[in-house]
Each structure stands twice: as structure tokens, then as C-alpha cells.
Length: 555
Figure (cartoon, rainbow, N blue to C red):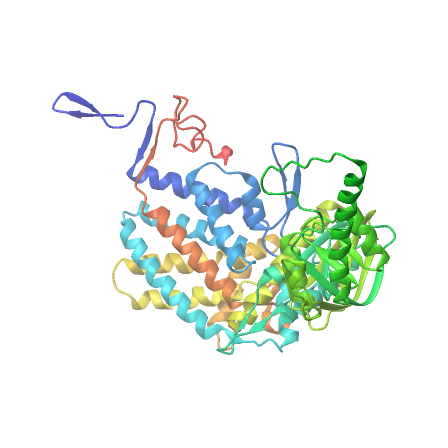
């Protein structure tokens, strides 16, 4: 790229670079973001459609989870990547509401584009959006209804709604899965000094196996380890298990430095082997002395050690993952021993039973019926791999939603009712604000209507009729909980129907959507540098760059 200065050309960027300035840069970013939002829009709600994503290797993913779709899509344009980040943040923070957050960001940008066309400056729009986001947060604080860890019925409804948009969450299976999720989350939740609860989602292990029905999914009050008991002679079912967790190898360690042992006679060889055997026997004796009857080892177990463990009637599992060891410690109350010299009966954990079971042709070890475990496992079953994976995604969403509700302590009604209430209140607020900012606040209010509108469209309803009816309800006293009943294809009271969502889903969705929209609106210059191979800046460039956003089909 060259600038002309008093007839003299000055090179600033390397040849082959691309630059898009001013209004064009804004137009492109808005178009790309809106296109990404439109891709996931049809997946919203229980009547949403699924997407089939095929990777370069031919792997197939069938889902309607917003974060999964955007991650698997492998987008190239920088504006599209920012939209993917919104979904990832929402997924990490709350675990649900990914589609909503991306749709909101797309709509906020589209409405901002309309205002830019009316010669309203991007800074004015951003200021208006700032005011609207602040007011929306304030309103959400008033709308939120309290919920506690003991309020199981409300938590069940929240879990059901979180899973409702997945194809798996239909009929009686949804209620069963919701019960499992609520039991799991309330089991691992910890009360802090300030009286609030904290839920570490990592402590809920999700193990999946194809084969069986979705109704076969079970909650294990303990940990499922995807390994088998090492020796065929060891007991496969142990009641009242005393469990030792070892972070050391039951093998003869090789020396750290290169060592050479010279053996000159058969007797020496025999003595050497006998010593090795004695060391392994001593290791097993130390374990047996503690009273342990089950051993989980993070490292290897020698064949000779396996033999001695078998003779003592101790079941052993080797090469257990570090994360599983930590979960076993939390579930059984055992302490992980780094050397056998430190191991004592106090370090042992307990479980009602430890069983090795064959599931879909693979052996697994179930550590079950632990007393008040602080780590549990949800074992997901379904007919095929694709259904199992979608089941897992539904459960992850539900865990995130229930955890958020317990931690934050508030919920709101779903079905687009909260967004419409915010929209109505923000439209009122816009009239109180002077200056051009009120147009941006009005645009923010209209953007929020995308949620009930999309829910109505996906349910096959007339979106305009639904919105008109909802606005009328929300403007009357006591109509703040009215939303779209997708199953009845009508406008109904969501509180009465039990369509509830955690408050955090809404606050996070609005915050991340607004932040991303604000960031993209402030861009008025896109510079795509020359690639290393000497070509233009590849697909991530702007129109005119090779495969750039001139053709929206790439994205």
C-alpha cells in the first residue's frame, strides 16, 4: 500500500496487503456478525432445528448447541471469530444461553448499522448502548426471583428448560435427566463462609457410552473409572471397600543415572531376582497392613506385584488419570499417597461397593454408594454415538444452569418473557433520555425482541402476531411473565408453565453481546497484511483479498 506525498510515493504496508476504511469496514463487520447470528438463530428453543457439521476429516457432529456449532464451523473472518468468542464465554461462565448471546450481538450490530445509515456517529451509538446495558442490568436485578439450594422443584424446572432445546430433552427422559442433574449439583455444592454456595462443575464427571436407551443414564454416588481390574484372579465385586489411592508405581524403579550391574554367577542372578521379588512383596505388605482391599494406582503395577495383591485378595486398577484420582479422593474421602511409607489406615477412603462391570463390551470400574461424596458421576447412555454426545451436551447445559441458579441465587422466566419485559422498560427509558442516544437505546430495546420473535418463528407461529400480543400483555399490570409457549403455539404465562432460567444466563448474554457489538462498532479501519507466502491475506481479509468477505458464503 502506498501513500502519495507531494508527488513522492511512500510505502507503508507491504505489497498485496488489503485495507478497508471507514463505513465500508463497519458494513463488512456488521454483515459478517449478522450472518453468523443468523446461522444459529434457527436452533433456539425446544422447537429449534439441528445443524449437521462435517469436519475436514469427515467427522460428523449433529447438534443445536450454539457454542458447539460455532466452534466446529471453523470460521475465518476476524469479526466472525469475535462472535465465536461470545459463545465460548457464555458457555464457560454459565453453560447455557449461547445461542441467545450470539443472536443478540448480531441484532445489536444490525440495528446499529441502520443508525449509521442515518448519519449517527458510532460513538453516539456506543454511548446509547452503554446506557441501555446499564439500565438492563438494573432492571434484571429487580425482575430476578430468589431461589435456594433446597428449592428442588424450581431447580428441576431450570434444568428441564436448559435441556429442552436439545433434541434429547424431550418427553419423560428430560424429567429423569433433570432429576439426575439437580441431585448431582446439590451433592457437590459447597457452602462458603459468606453463606453463598459454590459449585465446581469439574467434580461432576460425565462418562458416556453408546448402547442402551437414554433412560438408562444413571447418577453414580461416586466415580466411574474407565479402566479394568488388572488381574483376572482379583475380586470383581467388593462390598464395604477400603480404598487406597497411590501416586507411586508398584514397580522396581530404574535408577535416575546410568548404572551397570555385573553378575558373574547364577547364584548372584538368583539373589538379584529374589531381592526384586522381596521389594515388590514388601510394597504389597505395606498396602495390606493398612487394611485396604481396593487400590487405585496412578502409575504402573508390576506383574509380580499384581500376583501378590491377588493373593492378599486386594483388587487393583492401574494407570488411573490424575483427574480421576482427585475425584476418587473427593468421593471416598481417601488421601492420595505419594510414597508407600506414608500410607496408613487413616489415608484410606471408603465406598459402599466397588464393582467391575462390562458395559457395551468394555470393562469399567464403578466406585458406588459413597457416603456423602463430594464428587459424583453421570453415566450417559443412548443408542448411538451422536445421540450420546448430544445427551452429554444437554447435561452440561443443565449442570451449568442449575449451578448458576444456586450460586447467583436468582432466576427469571423464560420463553422470551424477560427479554420482552426489558424491551418494554427500555423503550420507556429511551423517551426520558435527551439527545441522539435515545435512538440507540430504542435500537437496543428492539434488538431484545429477537428472542421471543425467533422462538415464535421456530415454533411455526406468526412472529408479528406473537410480538403484538406479547407487547400488549407486558404493558398491563402483572403481565411481565408472559412469553412464547412453543408447545402450545400461543402466548402464555411462563411462570405458571414453569419455564424458568437462571438470572445469570440473561445478565451474561446481554453483557457479552453488548461488549462484542461495542468492540466491532468502533472499528473503522481493517488492515490485512500480506501472508508469509507472498499472497494476499487469505480468507480472513476484506473484500478483494483472496477468498475474503466479499462472498458471505465462505462464512
